[in-house]
Image (tube, rainbow, N blue to C red; front, side):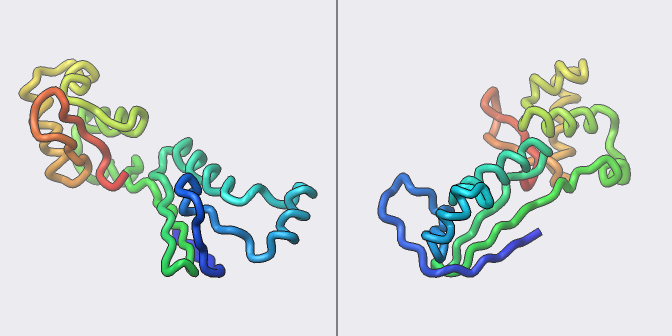
Length: 153
């Protein structure tokens, strides 16, 4: 889902200002609505969108500012739903791994071995199969620092 907002050119004065904080076109009117509790403080909606997406297991929204006058918010969706996964012919261990990563954000080979009570070789093969099917993305090359995340998250 994509939302677009066209606004006046945005100039940032301080590095600590978020690049997503777009000042209102009419600050006086925005101030009145803010104090009347009709709108939130500028920028607080973005923080809330990120929080809500994370709480629902969705990827963080993508915020794009184009030429300082167009602002886009792109909200992704969870493409790894149960109905989609059931059509992929994955085994129970692999489904457990996906559920684990959705909850925890990542999984290591060792964690996968413990969750599924399997040997290292089987865990490596299963994780490699998930990577080959573009479900998991491997972070790291080999060894203890390597972990897997859902591709696109």
